[in-house]
Image (cartoon, rainbow, N blue to C red; front, side, top):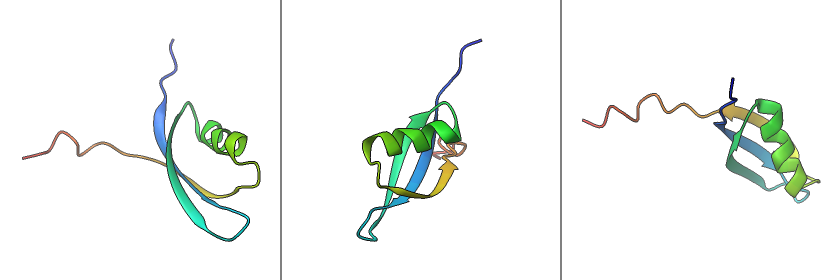
Length: 60
């Protein structure tokens, strides 16, 4: 069985108090957090949510 990556929005805060939102493709919620921490070790992860694409097909 092959694991499929899904899109997550990661909300994080830098050491200056600036809040950022970033979409990442990951295997799990914890994997999404790890991806951000690997690039920005000082980031304070505030939230991680799965991005839903359920309404993409309803373009009419």
